[in-house]
View 1 (cartoon, helix red, strand yellow):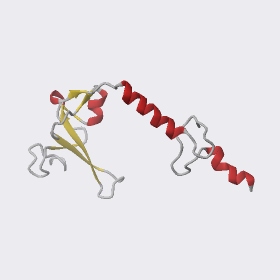
View 2 (view 1 turned 90 degrees about the vertical axis):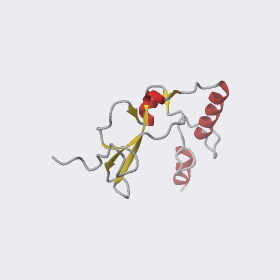
View 3 (view 1 turned 60 degrees about the vertical axis):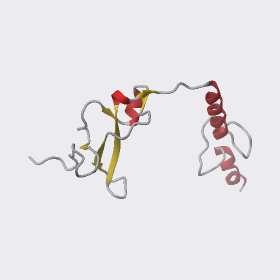
View 4 (view 1 turned 120 degrees about the vertical axis):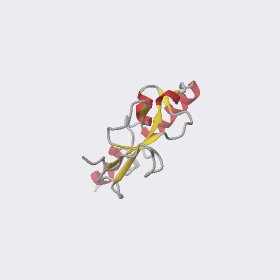
Length: 125
C-alpha cells in the first residue's frame, strides 16, 4: 500500500514535517488543542503541520500547524483591566447605534442595527 499523499515526516517535500489528517504523532497539538489544555505556543516555532484536501478552500488543501506540547507555556491569566476592556467591547457590539438600546445579542454586521430598527422602514411602508 502506498504512503498517504501528505506523509512527509522528515520535511523533505514540504519543508516542515507533514502528516495526513489524524496521523500526527503524540506530543504535538494545534493551537486549539493547546488552548483546551490551558496552554499556548509561547513563541516556539511550528514543529509540524497537518495537510488535508478540502472543498472549502480555493486551492483545495488546508493546513493546521502543530506545536510541541512539552515546550508550550501556560495561558496568561485574565487581568482585571483586560476583563473590563473585553466587557466594554462586548457591550458596544450589542448596542444598537440607531436606538441606543442593548439588543441582548451581538448585532449583525450586515444590518448594522438591531432587528426592530432594521424592520422599522419595512413596517412604515
